Image 1 (cartoon, rainbow, N blue to C red):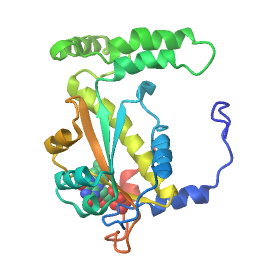
Image 2: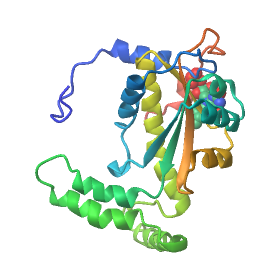
Image 3: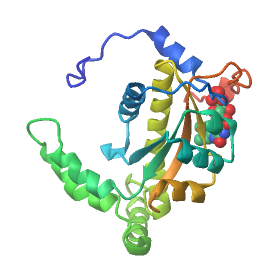
Amino acid sequence: MNAKSGIAPNLTLDEFRKVVCSRRSVRRFTEEPVPDHVLDDCLELAMLAPNSSNLQPWEFYVVRTPDLKAKLAEACLGQNAAKTAPVLIAVVARTDTWRKHSRMALEQWPEEKLPGIVEKYYSKIVPIHYNQGPFGLFGAAKKAAGLFVGLTRPVPRGPYSPNEMKIWATKSTALAAENLMLALRAHGYDSCPMEGFDECRVRRLLKLLKKGQVTMILAAGKRSEKGVYNRQYRFDKDDLVHYL
Ligand SMILES: Cc1cc2nc3c(=O)[nH]c(=O)nc-3n(C[C@H](O)[C@H](O)[C@H](O)COP(=O)(O)O)c2cc1C
């Protein structure tokens, strides 16, 4: 597939549907390891997720060493998915890499000529838009200005605080987590996303900085026979989908 050309290839809807519909949260895995080339490919596909301003605020911590994995599984409240998975992947959202990544976006622009608008975006707009300043004071000032200017025209309404930056980074990172789970499925492997973990302990085990938000820990491996606990169900579409 020529990703650069922007020409979309012909796809098989059936295969996509199979990947999406066969993905389940698997709570018990076999001992079969996930090969390195599969993990690598899945992580590459995860990183192709759409993300805010292409600032790629994610990180992935792949834990396979038995000792660390056992400790991490304990920090995941001893859940079966974590205890039986041959690999655990902490999907982390970073609220602090946007500055470095905006420089990288300029350095690594994939076309020969850097458009002026892109240059302006990463060198002028991004440093204002995502900067919250010491104690979030710049964010608060931006919010006040936004409220005022927003009376007469549409304006961006954030991120205006360190907490909103967490939401900002988490949105994109969660999309990467979904790509990762679907990629594992497409390779014939399974996963369970987990937010049931002790964040303080996880942070300590992974030696994470304060600015890293553990969005999810994914247990990954081959589903065991009794790995899926119940049939999949979703609420009525009519209540949740609104055509306007
Ligand atoms: C953000 C998030 C956190 C989750 N945390 C856990 C968890 O800690 N433990 C668990 O067994 N499942 C967890 N799940 C899986 C959900 O329970 C599961 O997706 C849901 O029940 C629907 O089932 P399905 O994924 O098989 O369709 C989590 C899912 C998401 C998206």
